[in-house]
Length: 338
Image (cartoon, rainbow, N blue to C red; front, side):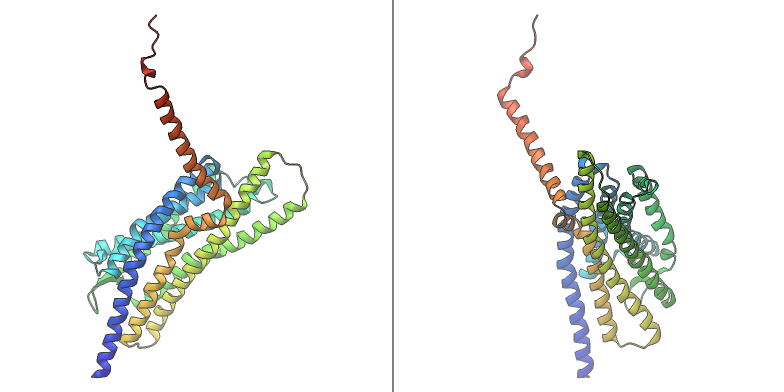
């Protein structure tokens, strides 16, 4: 009896610990994510970045990351931090909301992968490949990627349902689909974007080394473009590492739990520990979409300068306007009476 009581207490302590973890970290993610993505969008719409295709992918990643911050994080905070589950009010809510959450969290890592591919194309010695790195293609690819992610996950809401035991929840309709989706998630969310980032990154570095061997005179515009490319590549490297690591950790834990569920019988304590690990891994996976602005700021002097220039320029404009008003308070009365 005492053993059962101690197990129940341990399970209860795990649940309380998870609630506290989500309550604290979710608020932190919302604050730093909202501030960071707002500033990222502001910087990437500056003239220095606006017409660069790689920066356009970064802008798309910032916008999709802000969707994660404003939707996924609050929904998960209510669900795991305060036991308010918005997905269980109806089967339609379960299917539609879960489908939206799955699609939204995939987009930031895919946009970073596309940015890596764009840097590979832009650094290529081939004129034909470099032609694919332009702002018009980037805009079309972003729209196609959103549609692609939505279409390939259309099976997900069809296999979501509301179960009543052991606790009412919106979950997988069968254990077989849970195992399939864990492997699917690992492939689509973690492996494919990470592999694309790695391969295109290595090829980009190779192209850069090859270009250093070719001594060609460059004007100021070309030198500025190469400097911008170097900063974008540096920003990409750290983004690729963070997204690849965090999504892989989350997907591997989910895959392990889903496979072992069908192979062995687990105790309630083991299930509680595995649920704790999956919830913690989901928090880790949010780190990339919520902190991209701070990674950009740390990895690129150009990004920091553009951020400072944006605020300093705005302040200078406001000061100039105020000075004109003070010096010429009655300019509207200087009208030619002749």
